[in-house]
Image (cartoon, rainbow, N blue to C red; front, side):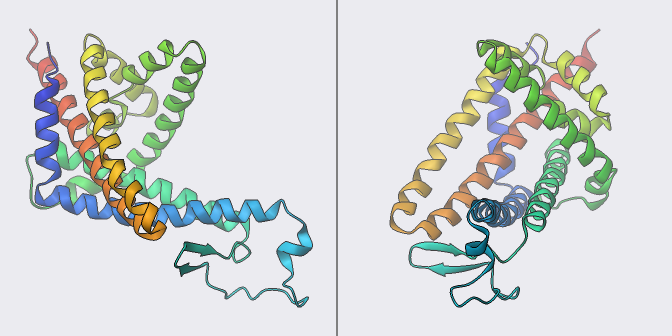
Length: 261
């Protein structure tokens, strides 16, 4: 058996709470909060866009709202959005920018957790072909999501099988400089014989995420804003743990492949 789930989980937890793991958590928290603002603004903008145009573009006194209005106000009830501040195209563009930035951060995290470095984030290692790898990771992520969604529609089991088969696609792109098609084929080959163990790893990650979501939900009952911040922090920890554990599992499988006669 090439993959030892318990070892991958233990190593993932350990690497998450090392110094560079915590730096990555902080970076994902920042992206998470910015992504939340972009997502909320997008939702608010399009909700307003499909209402009566006169109510969107004209204030109560008949004048056009100032384009310099802040995007939101923090109130006792959470965030009060000014949905007419930015046009829909600008908001969507910002959302895409944050999504691509987070993908680049995932690639960087994979490279860090595949290395022996536990304190700093090696700049040379992280920057190597980063834009190229990010582009292929975005495309591969979209293709895997579509394939998995189609599989889930087809009685669920095919979707789970496909998700497990492409479990290592980001690791292959980040660490082996593979193209999208190469990475999908390589990930499929590496998952062969390890899919049951990958189920165990996926279940552990899901359970950690479920448990971690409880405190922010409770905090959100008291303060929506505090709940959103707490949610961003816990989500970042879970994401970094997931990346670390998956990368250590990938290194196990790849190492076993290299040692195979």
